[in-house]
Structures are given as structure tokens and as C-alpha cells.
Image (cartoon, rainbow, N blue to C red; front, side, top):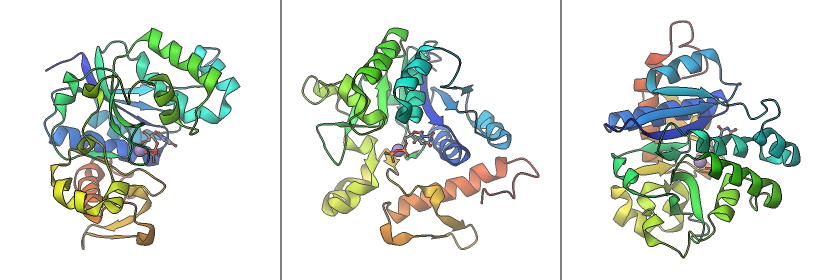
Length: 271
Ligand code: UDP
Ligand code: MN
């Protein structure tokens, strides 16, 4: 039970909040001993906040536009990087000594507490450019100093891909070459894209997956699901996601998260 270590995610709206709920539930179901923290934006609705409070130890409202702080100033210079600045706020969680950030579109399929043995900045390779790490899952150490350096880096260099991944790869630029122990195995951030670009490897190793990442345009919540038939519908043509992982997400959502929606909210757009 390490109270000073936490899994951290982010949701700025109700859709990503649904992702965070499933992620949090999946961490609990696989018996994590660490704290669960979700950073939320002001646009997350009260019913969603209620459910997040049931799953997470800490629900932290982070508002990048708060009056005159460093992030606000950085954002004035780089208005394109709104959500990214919110994600960088995870470095301000200095009441924890070490954390693992996870995108709200990830799903844990095996216990991953061993990630806390790793150091900042540990992450898995990005399937599109493996000399960059994917910023959907990473180990970090909260620090006010690192946070302010990151903001400084943002304002000076921006992000080469328009998001947090570009900034973090720019800032932690020796990741590709400096220390192999900071390369997490790909099974800690298995993105659906890799399944289609290297199917034989997926068939060989996919069963070892620990974290699935639904990266790209189409998220699990973009589909609709019928809990009675356990069938998913939606634009399956550009299926960026392996159907069985997508089904795992929906089964967890409908069996564990939907029942947590309080009466009167449960039949809102959450099915
Ligand atoms: N995110 C958010 N609101 C947004 C977009 C992103 O809260 O409108 C957070 C969320 O935690 C998400 C992460 O930022 O998982 C990264 O975005 P996304 O997963 O959509 O990027 P991808 O992994 O597809 O590149
Ligand atoms: Mn993602």
C-alpha cells in the first residue's frame, strides 16, 4: 500500500470521463495497491463527477485558465495547446513521489503495479515512430521544477505534433538512446494500430497485453453497444480497434460503470 504513489488520468469532458471511469475500474479490478487520481476540467458534469468520486481516491479540478499563473501565461502564447497544458498539470501532484500517467482511452487488462519500479521518464515506443515514446502511458515524478521547465519548453518550442506527445518527446529528448530501462515493453501500451500493421506479432504476443490503448479518432465511446446481445455497432470500417478489446471495454462499462450512475442520470446518454 504505497499512499505516495498514484495512477493519474485526465478527463476534460464527459466522454473522456467515461473513459476514465472504465480505466479506474480496470485498475481496481486488477487489484492495484496504488492511489487513483483523475484530473478533471470544469466541463465535466456533476453526475460524471459523482461516479468518478466512487472510483477514484482523488478527483482534482484543474483549470488551465486560472487567473495569471504560469500555465495561463504559457497558454496565452500557445492557445493551441489547451488540453496539453492540462495534461502537464500532472507534474504538480507533488503530494505523490512517483506516478504513472494513463490516457483516459486506455484499459488495464493485467495488474501493472510493477511500473512503479521504473524511473521518470519511462514509456513505451510509439508504433508510428518507435524512436518517440507514446505519451498515453508514462512513469513520472511530480515536481514543481519539472513542471515549470515543461511550461517554459512549451512556450519556447511548442509541440512538433500539436499535442503533449510532441512536447514530452522534445523535453525528454534522450529517451530513445540514453537508458533502455526507460523503454517500457510495448505490452504496457498496446495500441490497436499495431494490431493491423503487424498482425503476426499481435497473434504471437497480444495475449501478454497489460494495457490496451484506443488511440486515434475513434474511441470506444464513439460506438454504440447493446448490452443484451453484447454487440457493438458504429463505423466498424475504420476499425482502429481490435474488436475483442473494444468489447472488453464495453462489457466493463455496462456492467460496472453504468450501475454507478445515480437514479435519474442512469438513462441519460451513458448506455
Ligand atoms: N483528453 C481530454 N479531453 C480531450 C482530449 C484529450 O481529457 O478533449 C485527455 C484524455 O485523458 C486523453 C488524453 O488527453 O486520453 C490524450 O488524448 P487522446 O487519447 O484523444 O489522444 P490519442 O491517444 O488518440 O493520440
Ligand atoms: Mn490516448
